[in-house]
Length: 488
Image 1 (cartoon, rainbow, N blue to C red):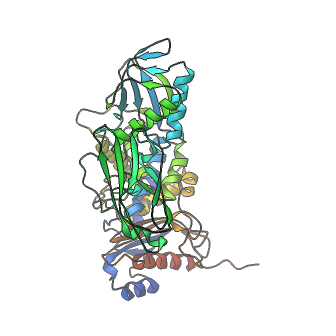
Image 2: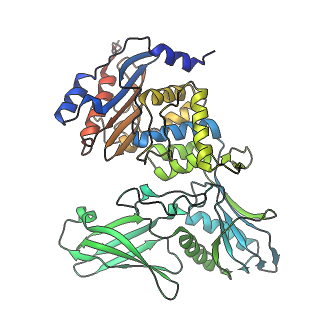
Image 3: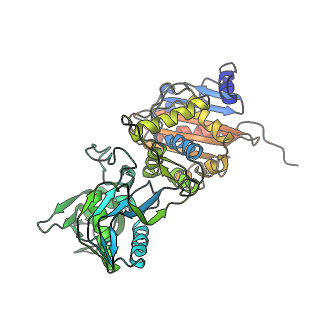
């Protein structure tokens, strides 16, 4: 017997629908030199197909793929799921000395920061430990392989940018350095947060007469220099306007070195000493817990994933689908992997099994990392529409809808569709790559009826606002459709 959603999808093919794109959409395509063949779109109103244009064709979805990751995460992991970070050891404590290694084990903690680490170290200090007579062992084994970033070519020309961060199970501050840059006519002052032991920052930038608002025009990838005394120097490169103050966040340090510098500084500030090195490894089976931190509950992380379209959080959630399960007491716990499995293969299987269980055919569907920052990810509007319909029926529909940007109000939709009936009412996830613009979500029409709307433009001309204008025109058309309820 077909499930209700599968039955509805089967009925869709029997219902009349508008095959041609609405006139406002078609006109904008022609105006910008694109053809209707570059667009796939679907509009569902209840069980009625309002519009279906090449809707079964797999397309690059860009960040609308985050809807797949976040909804499946809510349904599979549940609202009590929390990633966590642990400090463990199997060494003995003699007076104020820990005689053995200290293990810092990651568990996909979305909130792991320098403040969190300091709090965990303070717990060690409060327990009377002042010296660690061993190594600091970094355990990322919850994800396999543990370091997906190693050896991977850059996605684009900005590998240092936050949107390009590739997560692991032990990612502190997303490995970002915040750089405050202030210049006068003759010199540049730099401040780095967080401060890291053995890491300094300096300027190799040339000061020029230029508009401060366009400072990024002269930005170049910073250089990381390892000195003879085992210190690290981050050297900013390019040009920078005179009399300008700006802040930029960069991911340039090798992440083991980042954690080492942060740990040593925080531990020293608490009066502690680490005798050994910082190295990758795994916690011994007999290790006991010394301190832990738990992230916020999953619905809050999902909101922070979809509203600003956070790639690192989305990728962490996707990998969590293949590595962790919810635990009512601990928030999460690791799942054992079969010898021939990777975290990715099980996450991929989890998503596909969920789709099939909800009557969604996964043929042609490709998920690489769950964030949409991918050249190979594919999903059709029919598949995305089926997911959005399932989202409305989900036990966690309120949490899912609350995570999506509101047109003309917040998130990545805050400056879009002002003046449209969709403003303040439509909840839409956006997606943008160089050749991709997409939206997917829920749009109430003039009657107040909720419509599922999916539109994807895949075209080399989609950039510079052209593709955005096309998909926004479709959303506006849906919001104006239907029959307005007369005011009494």
